[in-house]
Image (cartoon, rainbow, N blue to C red; front, top):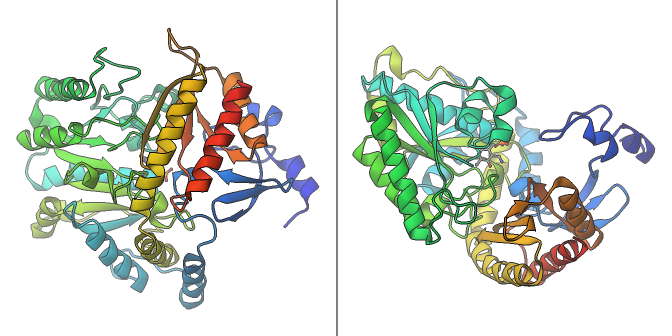
Length: 449
Ligand code: PMP
């Protein structure tokens, strides 16, 4: 490792960071994180802070999970890599596929297609959806529907179904045949309907209207996050996704649940879909599958699709898609260990209990600080939306967001700013004391604003 001076001098000089403006990095260089322990990280200057971001919604087990580290080291010794392309397989990928199909059997998932991360998983799901309809002899079903404010990663397919202009505008034209409907966001309300259940009904109606307008027989799939994460932790009323499922069934449209964030206990259930009793046709997962210790994802495939593909003997059924690192044995070994720890520690229950504590502290902060326009949460995922004016709901600007994040950091808590939202997604191993510590740090940030 080069010395500290080298890192300081070259930070932002040789890297273009994701989701950052290359020109701004020079004036406002990223914090260099050097170490992690439990729910804490330490930066280049030796400052240790509570990680309220959980890496990037993924380090559910915190930074000191020895079983994952050991599984990775052991697998590196045994076999650092082999391909999963037709003709070869590896032990850890078989074992993890078994674990995942058991884990998500409640949601009706029967097969796993491994990827290197969330964007890959979304891309895989979109492709398999199209292919499914070709196998079924309905080749016109090519379109995708999605939610405004949804986030589905950065490949062209995922970017096309993304519902946020920030991730689209500079990369257009995107995939044709993608249409968006309003998300049930009670704060930035598409229908000015304050009642969450009635708002959900209106959004469901908008979905059905769009299906009628497009023609159901032209639509391959609808993709949604059970809780919209990057769009600002928008938590749909619990009736929303079940009703979306009904409508998809009525029009024979595939439902893809993007569970990249919500997949392993984050919302207080083992999946967002399970939390509202929905069985999607496919689930995209990544992030916490290895608790972030190794890049890995998967597209989980439900029974109806698996049967169609496996019964097909024509060229339509062959999967002409896959990644060099699909089923990477080291990633899969990490995944097996991460899932075992996640289950052993009942992280779903901890997310739910600590989430309730966090929610009540966030409501207190909202009551005390005018700069807070809205707080939204489910389990241990939350957003604090900042405004410069509560009445007009004018979004807080970048400078204000930075004041809050910097002051919170000085008070010992790492926050993540996304637009005018502070996104909270701490490790799911959090204790009650750490929930309070997080809220205190956030409170110090809000006070500075
Ligand atoms: N889907 C969702 C819901 C996500 O939140 C993300 C990433 N935050 C992705 C897909 C893309 O995952 P990745 O960054 O691992 O490619």
